[in-house]
Image 1 (spheres, helix red, strand yellow):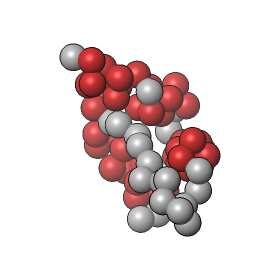
Image 2 (cartoon, helix red, strand yellow):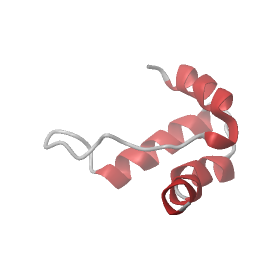
Image 3 (tube, rainbow, N blue to C red):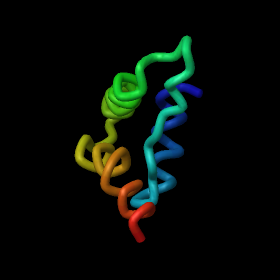
Length: 66
């Protein structure tokens, strides 16, 4: 999936967007770095940095704690 297509999916999810990574496999990028790369790619597609940060931290935290 390209970053542009993923950005379209993210926009459709709106405030319910949760960004996560399946990294952590032996041949994958270190998970925090993979997530940073994902956010960076989506920012380049014009998505708001604050919204992406929330999707990677506050939104998942709210789902788990509620």
